[in-house]
Image 1 (cartoon, rainbow, N blue to C red):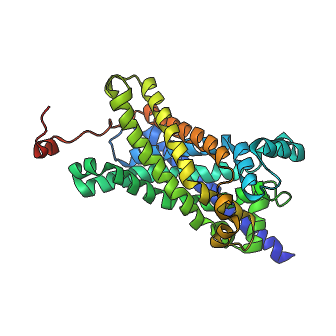
Image 2 (cartoon, rainbow, N blue to C red):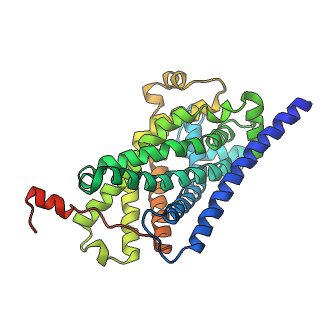
Image 3 (cartoon, rainbow, N blue to C red):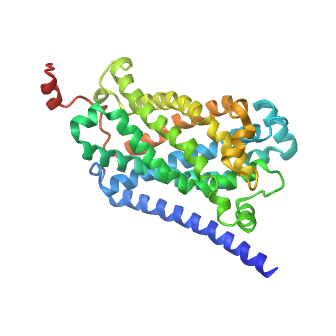
Length: 345
């Protein structure tokens, strides 16, 4: 009994530490905003802090808002015989657990994806500027898509380490009825059964899912914004109002989100099943699901991720607008490169 109590206390301490890390991060970002001037220097520490704060809001709020759809999507993936469609999934969940059942897993979702957003958006800005400085202005323009891909992949690597513990708790709560109803019940129980490994056994499948997803999310968004201003929007970005710019952001975000969902869905299916079943492995789950099984729940995920990605970019860009952060225009060919290529206006 004493050992069980010690284990539960350790699990609670892990959870409390995670909450503390998130709280400190939020406070630091807000304080940075309050201490700063109306705008700050591009690439400064305050710029990165505010970008991280924007990431916390964009990911934490949006992922928590779609918890009901995410819950049904996860159940479609792990128990397709019972939950045969999105509508059946909602119907069965409400019948068995009531309306409150649709909110299962909201706490680990909010904490986990807030921490992920802090790292994802904050580190993306860091790596994008760092890699750009390394290759120079001309190569930054010529290889800008590769730059977006490299910066986003680097950022997501660290973001998933922050996300993994809460993602494991979320999936366990949502897909194992009766296992635990709250984060405070789930985290200590998982720790008691499997130790720290319970929270990180899904990190590799998370990388498999999230890194391609984030690479598509950022690269597709950046290039779509560039194309929209070049071919669709009838005037240069500098002449657009803040509201018009945010509309472009939302549209580009939704387009990017659709591609994100398709690219990352097979790995998402593996993560859902892996975190549900104790002692399972990614390769074993992949073999069990088969070619058809990994695509279960794709429609629900396209709806969820498309809306989610669009809202994330909208919130993130709104934070930049609100705090008057530097927002460079879509990339243009440097004058030095134009001269080398003999391009004249």
